[in-house]
Image 1 (cartoon, rainbow, N blue to C red):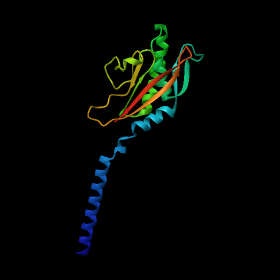
Image 2: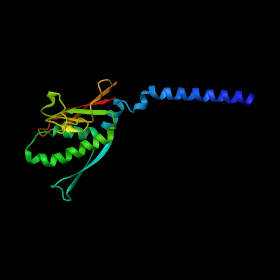
Image 3: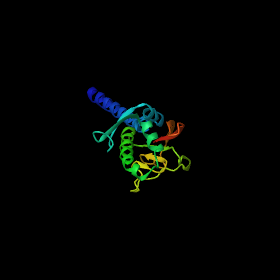
Length: 179
């Protein structure tokens, strides 16, 4: 009789402990991943390597080592130009944005504005209409999908300087949203 009471008591303690543990997991904001400030820190400091095809390079490829913020700023400020320049730039842009996307994880969106069209404030969707892919417009880029309207979103902003051809420094505004 005593062992049955003891067994039932231990069983009830185990069940109540598991209910408390499962309830805590569902309400933990850290379980969803890093907040926008943490992702912004990684974007601004973590260096990645991007290798892309280039006809001008001796071996047919070029490699760039830069932070994700530098890559985003380079793509955002190098918009426009002659159509002959666009084909080689397109390869760099797609590889750079893919490297940025690989490092930010799911449930993260990066929007950046720079260059001549920075005042329009719009980031476009890709030509396929899929907002989850990296996209590029005149001076704005977007990496990742839009957060759902009902999601709690944290936001961080990075102002990244980029020198231009005239020797002046442009500022690219990088907005990171995490939900």
